[in-house]
Image 1 (cartoon, rainbow, N blue to C red):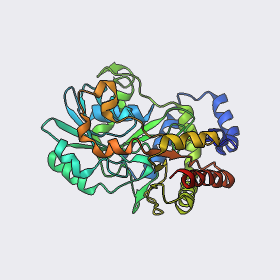
Image 2 (cartoon, rainbow, N blue to C red):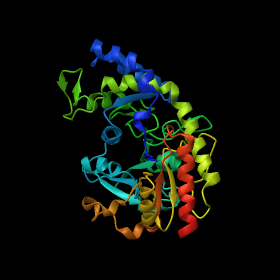
Image 3 (cartoon, rainbow, N blue to C red):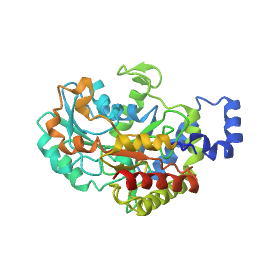
Length: 364
């Protein structure tokens, strides 16, 4: 048995929407504004957001949100010490300084430690809803409003999660989304977006994403091309209706893991209230490297999200001393993401649990 971490080729929409996608491609409507507007309207309605603008990727969405908020050289931006690297590089690209903060046991920014890292140069906080888990950020939003700090929610892993019908991204000035092939709602390439409430940012972001050009003619603020492409917009237009079904399947797999994995593994909290969509299912063990080799031998693919904290990336070593990240340093050597793809079948899921429990019985 060969079990992949993500089964992109099993996506049922590949076959279901094949005819419509072929027709779309043959019509050559690769620059049709109607496709973009249809996508943006659907996502805006789904999120119950006032504004939503599509971008070429989630990374570029962070960059555009920061730039439209006026973040500039030497400004400081609070980021979690554990995240995908573009959370940090998006800040650095603007000449701003990413300031790492330790994470809690759910791999989210530790709210109790943020205030110690906030200074007079702090202009924004990027909060990552890690692994698909959404947390209530009302208190953080109140703090940011008081300090006049921009709050940006990185919802790349949590699109579709909600707390009492309040979706991730709704607490902040900007919600950031990614729809690349690894995401729960996935396109067939890179695609992202930004949600926001203030009309002031709509014109700014529209200009910036189009190379800094106004009305497609006059350069206002020289920038790169951050536009979304119509093929991936079309794909998400076709797949959005299936999102709730996908999330339910991932929750079902997470429940099976929680109920059947040996309790010697530190497992994530199981939530069936919509606040966790299980983009990742992360366990912890002190024998991670040995477990990875054991699972590889049994043809089970896993991932580490992520191997390095912010200070371990060469370009950030001088900015973020590891003494600030006691919990992050502990967790990074124990975390392991198991397959939780909605396209896994029942036998594959049972086999994963069987092998994990064999390992724990022998070695833990």
